[in-house]
Length: 378
Image (cartoon, rainbow, N blue to C red; front, side):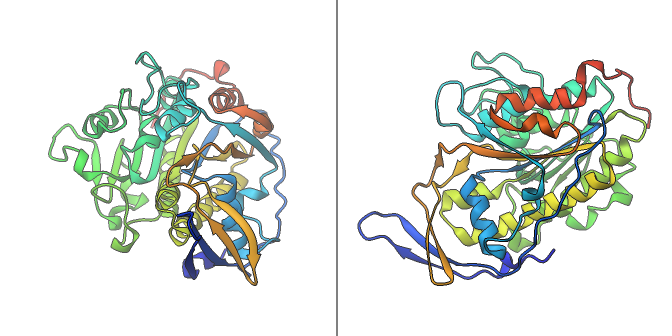
């Protein structure tokens, strides 16, 4: 699939007296028509791929759609047969941050903003990778932020502040995560003899090298990625992680993979449409690759969702061949977000739900209570 978002042209107007900026975005013509994805006949899911567009509210989705191919275009996940609506408040506020929101997916429990996999009283909460490791599962994480950032960290770290990233890094090393790819070199003690196999160069992102290792941590930037420096894309990392997990789980019950397009959110904080669309193009290509995997492996459930929306993005009446995108805040907003599902158990994600229910429904799709507790043999 071609991705014309990389060569978009936008320019900025400023609304008089409001301080809000409006960007004009060309309506795209690279239209991909709808594709029918047949519903899986598998009774339960074996593998789970959870794809997170951080900060991806409904209007970010609509803007990416229009900017790529206009009104008739379909993004990869818009072909999924099931769509739901998710509300996402934290335990103490209608406003959520990524830590509290990701904790709900990982544990099924509401917590305070900034907390990771602990409840509002700072009590330990077991995460999906930890629960599944007792059932013979492998797990992986991918992010274009630091791998210690809020969303990925919620799946392995148990701590009362997302900002304690050196402590979070130690928790990753000691965790049940089999492969973790992202940024964050500055937070790890890379000289420790007890460290798992670590790679720092994109050229080493090679399945023939990594598949022989028991645990892999790939750190391709000091912190979050800067695409200008040749860091790997979300697509590249996700494909390697999928290959690794498929290889490692051949004699296991299955795998869980979370892959995040982290910087869709950062672009929203910056009120930068061009930045957001470039990040979204990588995210959409990643979803398409995961979908291709699920088409070949009909026991795989794919979920696409967001932790929250960022930027208060409003899409206004077009001006000629351009649509008008207006940012109304540099922070998160309270918009409900969508969830898209494809594969066995997808129907569980239809309708309106709280974000805590995503955790519960993932376990239901896996028939978790009846999974064999056998350990993996590799």
